[in-house]
Structures are given as C-alpha cells and as structure tokens.
Amino acid sequence: MFSQLMFPFLLDVNNEGELHIETMSWLIILMGGCAFLALQFVDMPYGRYASSKFGFLINVKAAWFIQEIPSLAIPLYLLFINAGNKPVQLPNQLLLGMFICHYTHRSLLFPFLIRGGKPSPFIPFAMAFTFCAYNGYLQARYLIKYAVYSSNWITDPRFLTGSALWFLGLLVNLHSDHILRNLRKPGETGYKIPRGGMFQYVSSANFLGEIVEWMGFAVACWSLPSAAFAIFTFLILASRAAQHHRWYLEKFEDYPKTRMVLIPFLY
Ligand SMILES: NC(=O)c1ccc[n+]([C@@H]2O[C@H](COP(=O)([O-])OP(=O)(O)OC[C@H]3O[C@@H](n4cnc5c(N)ncnc54)[C@H](OP(=O)(O)O)[C@@H]3O)[C@@H](O)[C@H]2O)c1
Image (spheres, protein in one colour):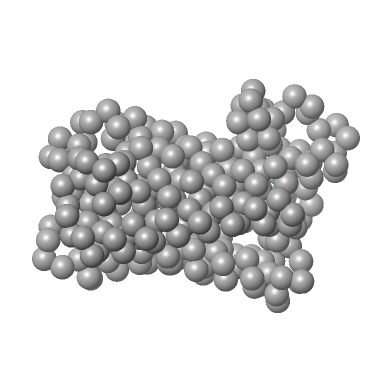
C-alpha cells in the first residue's frame, strides 16, 4: 500500500478503509490539477470575477456560511455522534482540533464579517459546498478512524514544526482577511490597494497564509489526505493569486511595482 510505504510510522492497517481514504485523497489531487488547468483560461468566478453566466447569484454571507459549514459539521458529527468505540488518541485529537478551529472561524465568523462582498454565482458555490463536504469527511474520517500515531508523535519534530507553521499561517490568513475587510467602510463595495502586514510583500497575503496553514497541517499529520488537501489549496489559491495580481496591476496605476504575487521576494 502506497501510504504505508510513504508513511511507515502509521501503524493502522485497515486495508479496505485505508484504500477508500487513499482513493479519495488522490481524487482531491486530481480535482486540484484539473481546476489549476481550467483556471489558466477562466478567472475563478466569484468575488471580483463573479458573473451570472455561472448561475443565479446568492447572497455572499449565506453562500460562504452554507458552502463552508460541511467542513465543520461533518467532523463534529463523526467525532461526537458516529465515532464508534475506539477512543480518539491525543495526537489525532490535536490534529483534528486544528482543522475544526479553522472551519469554526471560516463557517461561523468569516461569512458574517464580510463587507460589501459580491454575491456568489451558483456553480462556484455548489463546487465549494461539494469540496467542503468531501474534504471535511476525508480529513475527519482519516484522523478519527484510520490514523494511528506513535505515542510520542506530539514531540516529533514533524508535529512540532507542522503545528507551528499551521499556527503562523492561520495568523497571516486572519490578519490579511482583516486588512482586506477594513479597506471598505460599511456600505462600500469598491476596491482599494491593500497595505500593511504581508501585503507589503505579496498581492494575496490571505492566500499565502492559507497555503502555509495547510502545508503546516500536512507536515504535522504526515499523511496522504492532509498532503492532498495542501496540494489542492496551493493549486487553487496560486491560480487565484495570479489572477488578482494581474487585476491589481491593470486597475491601479500606482500599484506597488515591487510587490510579488504570492511568495515574498520570489513570485
Ligand atoms: N482552502 C482553499 O482551497 C480556499 C479556496 C478559496 C478561498 N479560501 C480562503 O477563503 C478566504 C476568502 O477567499 P476569497 O477568494 O474570497 O478572497 P479575496 O478574493 O481576497 O476576497 C476576500 C474578501 O475581501 C474583499 N476584498 C478583496 N480584495 C479587496 C480589495 N482590494 N479592496 C476591497 N475589498 C477587497 C472581497 O470582496 P469582493 O467579494 O467584493 O471581491 C472579499 O469580501 C481567504 O482567506 C482564502 O484563503 C480558501
């Protein structure tokens, strides 16, 4: 089994379930690859690129709440209602806690803090909803039922480095989304040049934070499902960051010329 070769410290050997999880993980990478190719030709059609060509428009707060809530509700359901008899070990609890922490904010707070966001077309909304249900199930099912870490995993350098990266990414993501939100006064819907924080270095500081967050999660989990999610996030958000960067350069003559797309000093 590929994951046992790649991640030999995992002690779990439930072949059928593991194969199911492995297939789901590879499908996420495939979905990310297909989306990455498509996004070289089409701007991801929500936010500033929203268009009714992609389905009827949904209020932005309702869209973000409904599309993201499966990534919170499904892990909570699997953890508290459908966990079975096997106790969830401490490393698994901490890793699942990271995922739940992110999605508590993303589904219950972020949508209701949005200022002047554009309504979301149905197609990207439905795709985001499907992805959140699929990935929420995959990450939670794997961590609750299949991943077995050694008892000293929480002192392993991979767990410690990955958790620190996850936290740093979360802070950058939250801070950057806060900067974007505060560019608008209540009632405004236009765009301004974001400044401060990691926006001094890159056009999509919020995406940089999100990518670092899920890369850190993947290092801390050291598993195929978490790596698949990190790769998917990178492929989607790197494409959107490139679109945003081009858009800023076209829209604002005084856009800072030294600002990079996504990775400080490099890209
Ligand atoms: N894990 C994943 O695969 C994934 C995928 C997508 C998004 N996300 C996360 O979800 C969050 C939101 O993503 P997003 O794609 O909506 O981000 P975004 O395009 O940067 O927009 C975020 C919010 O800020 C507003 N905004 C952005 N730039 C602005 C500017 N220059 N001036 C004024 N307002 C501005 C947008 O309003 P408008 O709606 O009016 O543009 C929107 O409400 C991010 O934290 C992102 O990391 C994660």
